[in-house]
Length: 372
Image (spheres, rainbow, N blue to C red):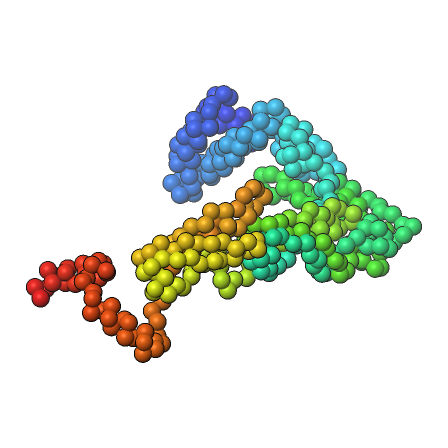
């Protein structure tokens, strides 16, 4: 009996219920024993090497192994060498796999119409628009169903016919080494049918490019990187297939007053050194139109942050708002009148060092460090 007719399990010396690890180990031992590099010029061992390799190639794949267990060598021999049209013989490898595993394995006949392509649109908005949200319109050129053929791709009054190359199967098969490979038909692109008379306006595609106005709703709280999906607003699918989606990518412009970190708004607020020393109040309007009064405690330093709860950005697709953080920047006066300078001189003459403990502590550390 030819080597290819010998039972694959017998070739590898394993039982029919052997696990994958056992099968792999058995193959490695036999492959090393019969490898052509170790048996120069021995045609018999070369044939055995090919046989055990073919057996392992089948049994290592769970789907191929299941087909072999059910049909034996017939799973790989029928429909591989005779005449007939590729795609017409149900008994070959692809159809046997389909019989066992269903169309999910890849032998399911005609391909379903592929949906249209998704589109991307980049939209720039201001921080105020991101706060309140907005409804707007965009103009884009998008592929839409052809009005002449209503998306069918065929000239009105004509229809389709079965593809001659694949006999309407949508796929063709070709022998590749030990197996048969199944691919979409290059003539009908997997549809199984071709147009008798393609529509002149869309050249048989069923869709044409056309400018379109689309309504877009931007929800409150969006940020740079937010993606809004508009289902079915992308490219039309070929020959009546479903359209793709349109994705709006949001970019928020920088704001002259506020910086944003998520739902938190940060604003750097300069105050005079007298307000910093004596305390006071500052008023900060937020993006919602409300004025927030912030109490400045006496003796505040630059860099100190004061938080106003609920005065930040809205939570996207949620409730509530983030916070407003006010960062204090104490400003030193640069233009003083004679009277102001005189008053500051009087203040300096009465300084004891207790007024600025951080300054005093720094110079004391210098003295300790350098012995000055």
